[in-house]
Image (cartoon, rainbow, N blue to C red; front, side, top):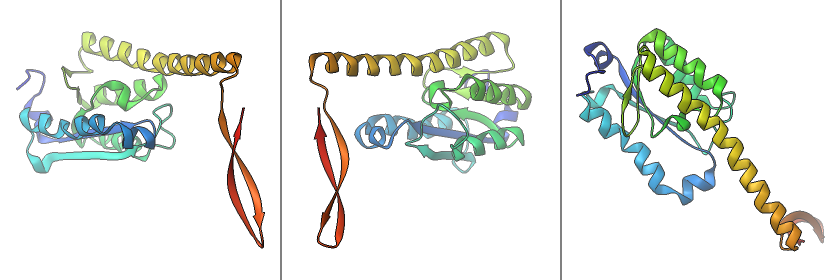
Length: 188
């Protein structure tokens, strides 16, 4: 057991939080989903009883750019604030949030409620200044990564457009008798 996990943490619940940005990722990247569900075993290995482990997977297929529409994240933050959670398990902190504001609010709540954050490699204590610094940097990098991904995708689209190879589907409507049906149109 990690020296950072105390009996007071084990008395409260362990929450495994799962998130992937799009439903396409959920369906096409099943290994990531499986690795996230496997964190339940990590909680067992670190000392939590099976009946004290919750899995929040409401946010699978939801972007981490804001907590506003992520019910699972909101429930997690509320449980932390009410002292029900002893540890949060996530594959990596970017699964928790891509927004620095949301991330730092959760980090502050975890520090106040003495909640540890656990990923595949380590256990972090937001009450410890070194761990808090590292978690803060990871959260900032996660937000920046979202920006960099957007730049790469847009750069790729622009490059294809310059070569005349950018294709996309437009929705069109076609009247067939009395019915109106959607018809995908290929545009260049």
